[in-house]
Length: 317
Image (cartoon, rainbow, N blue to C red; front, side, top):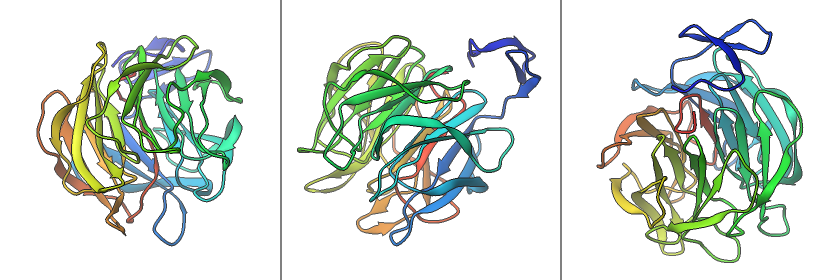
């Protein structure tokens, strides 16, 4: 695992952040926050240890009911953009992976919206696009994960969409799919450490939105989703260092929409979703470096879709 540039010391299990005390690093952990049960939005945050299998456990709560948001993570901190579902929020909240507990205010995005996509490096979190209630937004915002405060403008999307999926390598952020003015198959990329507009990368095998994404340092994975012809089961991948169209990876265990992904450097996990109108608590996993169908991991604490998700060991770290 790469060590964040905010660290001034490392002892194998913890980071010295600035002049603060050592902050322990959790085992590779994925968080799934909030979501929509089909009747209500929730504040629940579930945690799983990515390298094992088993059910999610309660980690804490968000400050407000949230779905259709996004999450970013460094080795030690998670930051969530709270989505309102039918409402629109600019709120950013954070917590520490090792501590558990409820989120704390981090700052705000420039515009209240939902349906954002996200990715991050070890130091910088990116929130791309979304819907402000007046249609899809092109703007991309960024934050420095170790420092609380409001977001700063990064640039604009190549394809102006919401309900996309995002993931990253240590240098490059990848966003794919989306809807708003029609479903999209566009894959685009940004260089995380700089600022600027998104650039065309290639295309997915089909137009879709509401898919889950995760990545190693080299490979981006996009799973499931929805298009006008129905719910999707396929998993696609691209090699992030090159440009090109997605290739078939395999299938997820169940066709579903508004699924969310997270990863360690080797394993991807996908949780929840709407399966043909029924919310599920299913968690699946894949080995990112290989290809093949997903395998059952366990269950979330409740069936829901459109959670905010992130991890402390993804391909951007």
